[in-house]
Length: 177
Image (cartoon, rainbow, N blue to C red; front, side, top):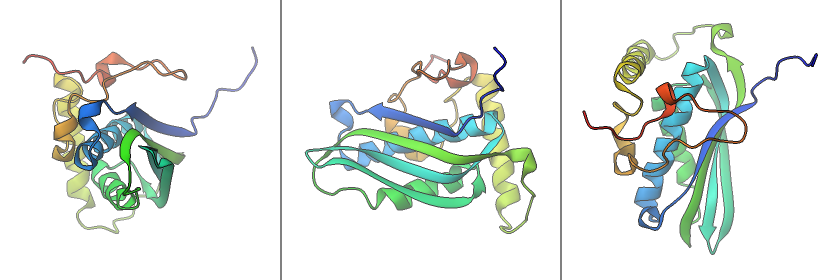
């Protein structure tokens, strides 16, 4: 076919919570884990996001979502702060059942000017680069932000309808070391 290559419009993850994760604390840990996986994929694809949307389904409350525009980023520490702020808007009645995160309004990382607006950004960039290097060498999920620790076994790699994941970078199932 003579179709132009498709352009990615979003990067995201979702997970139906098993019963033991259907508390606010553990659901937030799962959401943070989903964010870290999405941020790692953004970095691997050399993309930045300008809009983060989280949401889910609460029983019996129904579906909820919230979004926030951000300066272009793929930094998991920045995205973690965004997720935390959005999480405070969640329904307080009901039980979390299904969660998702969607990073939208994507742009190529190499097209963004580097503006040193935050003096700590250089240090964070080095920390994130080290995190990626360790995970590349020792397997995905070897090193992660501790907020997701209670959910480290939740939301394992699945094969989505739109793309086939690369197990070298996305299979973060626990391994014996």
